[in-house]
Length: 187
Image (cartoon, rainbow, N blue to C red; front, side):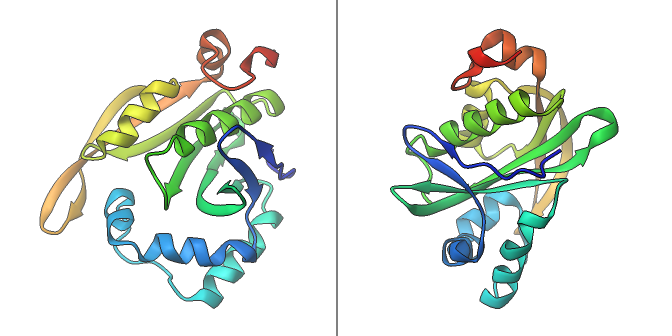
């Protein structure tokens, strides 16, 4: 479903297929303690060679879409559609920004959802966000995600438990409410 890796252009960001040229930015993200907390990443690969190999192979996976979020040609994060369930026409969305709070995430999400709903038969895109990440919750609601439930005590971070909020957006909601960029061209 995601065999074609597009470049999507918005007013603030351009989404490009990830590659080894984006490793320095990814490395910055996976080493940032605040980003680790926001994503619940206790430990991750932070070796440049391993990350370069990871990004070099993303183009070979037709079951996921990994895009670098770039602003003025600079890597500012990534957005990914993964965990594809082709039988049920659903997938997961995740985003990591090294430069949050400038509208980059909002536009990146709208661009990738417009692309997904316009070029694939996807019916549902879901995500999980930790309850303490109020900025992300605001953005997800603003672009059309609806809260479905709460996974209680899903994350143990520095000795404290945190809930994970499960959200999704359905094709009909995206097309009907047209919160995205260019959504009017959707079927």
